[in-house]
Image (cartoon, rainbow, N blue to C red; front, side, top):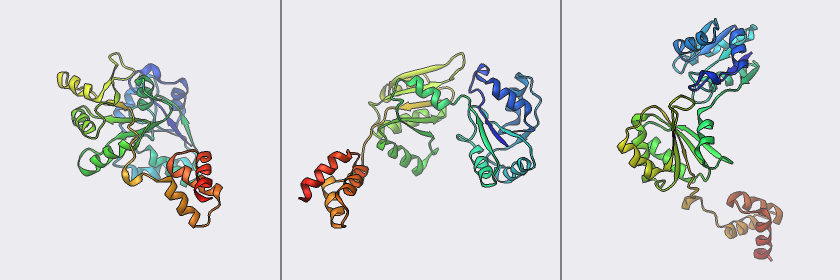
Length: 273
């Protein structure tokens, strides 16, 4: 069986008693960095058998772990911090287990993205987790442009040496006046949460250079590109020409435009009478 065990993102006091129990009883503890996980185990007095599993060896080591579990071993998977399978090769191991009918369960723990979100003061009803953007070039620019379409809060991870670049890119993309929060050292003694606009963040970090990795929560713009804008009346006529019934037309148009089914049904009745 595979146990996905959440570990602290900065404060050892956030390690759950169940997490300690699973790590203590597991036959194997798979981890990204054996030295870092070794310190975690040492802190809680756990003597575990560590197994190196990371981005650069996952293709070879994943099947080895799966074979262990198929033979009856319990494997606990941890990341360097937070929940495994988010921004790490744990995702691939989970898929491999599912493909091989190996049971998977989670032992929940801290997640930097959610911790930052609830501290941000921004909308938590809906959010988009972006994580780390591509480090440079066209892929990075395309992802930042794509963020303009989200009306929900956007969560981004960024390294300190690229933070000013990201802020400039966000301003260029139209996010300058958007509210945001910039979080660092979450759950640690010197935790810092800056709540300000992106433009104000630029001024702040020009005076005080950024240190440590950041979790940025960004107010959504909710823009729709011209290519994606849909004329509901035109779509109603197109679907009617295909012979679709009015209720089906209303449903299709509502899904394409974000407008209500009832409104689209009444609109279709009016246009098609």
